[in-house]
Image (spheres, rainbow, N blue to C red):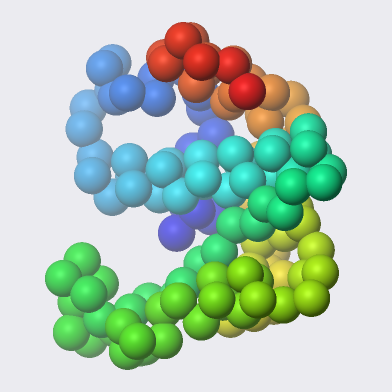
Length: 124
């Protein structure tokens, strides 16, 4: 869902925009991927990847989802146990997958880290 996320960082807490739960969720998935790629860039010795578990049957995903919940963590387990799978990737079903262009944009990554620091008082 990160592909539908909006990379605009000016209203991360939805204070000025009219609330849209689906868009907020997509934005949060985009932000997860941006953070993962920023960490991989800034700390090359740290393995940092983003993962899409696929559409799985959860309360949120619904009973019509194409994958069983037990399959959702497969890629995460593979990454945690594989010999040097790499870092700074977005994985879907254990394979690198395309990302929103903002994910690899260093200016967006730095802007997101700055916005997070402004919100939390903690800098990475």
